Amino acid sequence: MDMLRVLAVDDEVPALEELAYLLRQDDRIEHVTTAADGVTALQDMVQMIGGGERLDGVFLDIRMPGLDGLDLARLVGGFPSPPKLVFVTAHEECAVQAFELEAVDYLLKPVRAERLAEAVRRLEAASGPAPTPGQDDVIPVELGGRTRFVPQQAVWYAEAKGDYVRLHTADGSYLVRMSLAALERRWAEAGFIRVHRSTLVAARHVSELRFEGGRVTLTVGTEELQVSRRHSRQVREQLVRQHRDVIA
Image 1 (cartoon, rainbow, N blue to C red):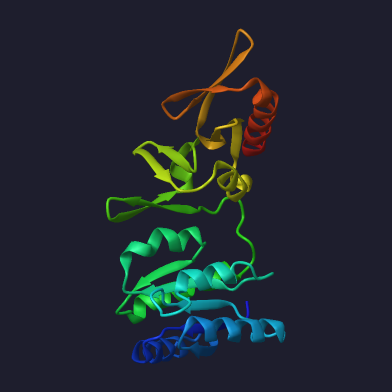
Image 2 (cartoon, rainbow, N blue to C red):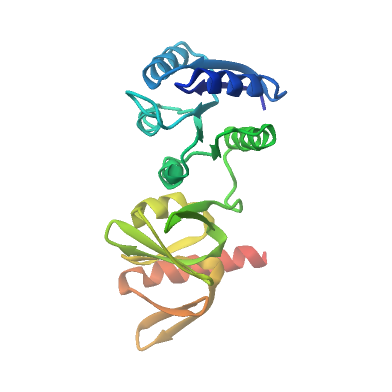
C-alpha cells in the first residue's frame, strides 16, 4: 500500500514535537501534519479531506482544553471515510472508551520509539484491504481499574444485558457496554449466529446440535443453550453450511 499520511494532535507543544519527530523517522510515514488543539485538528481534517487529500491516521491526545480527544474522535467517526485513530495519552483509564471508538491502538506517554513503531504497523494494517473473516478482533473490558482484551475467538457466546453485552468464555464472563445488535454487525462475517433475540453464538464453539420435542438445543463450550423457535431454522442452516465449508 501507499506510505501513510497522518495528523498528530496534542496541546502540549514539546510532546507534539517529539511525537511528530518520531513519526517522521518512520519509513512507512510519508507526511506528518500537526495541530495543537482539537478545534484546529478538526478544521485541518475537514480542509484536507474536503480538498481530496488522503489522511490515513490521526495520533490523538485525549486530555485537551476545549474539544478533547474523545469528542474529536466521535466527530471524526461521522466522516464518510474516517481516518484511523491512535490515541496517545498519559491517562490509562480511557482505554475502553478509545476502543469503543474503534481506535487501532492506545499508547501511554512517554511514548517509546519501538511502541510507536508497533502502532504504525497496526495503522498500516488497518488502512490496508478489509480484514478477512478469519482475522481476529478484540474487545476491551474494564475490570476494576484494569483493562483486559478479550479475543473474538475466545468467545463462546454473547448475551444481551440491557445496554450491555456479557461475553462468555472458557475463562469466565465479561460485561461490555455495547448492544448485541452492534456486536452482531461487528462479527457478522466471523461465524457468529443469532440463536435468540438475546443470544449470539460462535459457530466454531458449537459441538452439538440436538432436537428434542420440537426444541433445538446447542452445546457451546461447556454450556447448553436453547434456540428460539423463530431462529431454529436459520441456525440449523447456518451451522450445516458453515461446517460443510470447513470440511470442503
